[in-house]
Image (tube, rainbow, N blue to C red; front, side, top):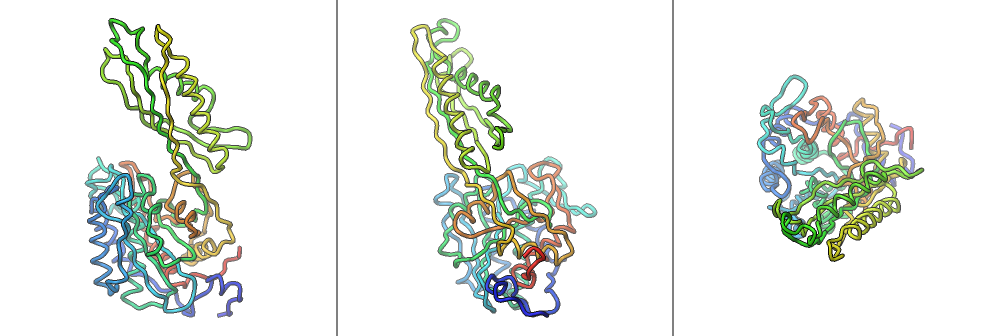
Length: 418
């Protein structure tokens, strides 16, 4: 084997000395994912998943002191049963520490899933539920890598495995992870949904908006003119946003983004003019300044609507809007060490790596924001968050092979692009 260049070695791109790549026990990997898919664990309810992972890791020889859970759930607005599960291993060879992550929670639609192998796919036998391969397939992929390394004592650089909570409700596990327990990783690899050859190097950013509208109640049949309808204010504002192109897909010259009003709560009865409404919305864009511009358009539309709706005495409603950053956008240069490692691993298993940018949020958003450049890879999940969800078995097997190559450093060799 040709010795690596000093630059490649310092970046951790070439670590292996074996002539043959380590292969995971794929039969066991498929059994693990079926077992994980059978465990209920919507966001905040990941306790049983953590217990399963701990049992497997300790049985494989993980030192108890190296296996920790943090307190992310105590800071999350959703509470929850447990924090993130973290396993840290010292390297048996030198190199930058690598972080491998996947999220444990599923969307509520997947509660009660009954995984069944149907030819080349895994589906839920209960067609009323989703499967939960988003992201139990990712959980199984990095668990498989950890088990192989522990049981076979495979050479590897310093490693951290982190199984994250509450991704589906706002990336809270990654956002609140105890960085002190991660061991200062230099690069991250996150397994989530999609094709196993897809290497996602960037993702959009988003604000979550809560708009509180105060109106004035009155009897809707006897004296409606004395009321100020909070629902009417909300309706006018949303109609203006839709009319002027600030709702849905938004394009202004070179700038693009999206927004959505996803929830409206308010009103007491049909015979009462609604005096209070809460609107929940979001604004997304890869461009932070344009994203802020979308938020400003929401503020202006609701303020204008509040001025327009008056009762017979001229009284108006009030609007208060809170905009919270859900996650910041990011984009990694293709020449980044983690991108090169991921592409090389994908190519090593016979797949053509495809660089991608996501219009959704990923745990990688917060990990990258915390100083850990992180790429995201898929595991063969299809039609996620629907009752048609399925897991491509061949792609899942390759995802497990990719994870083991990245974890051991075998796949870490420069690609043609480096």
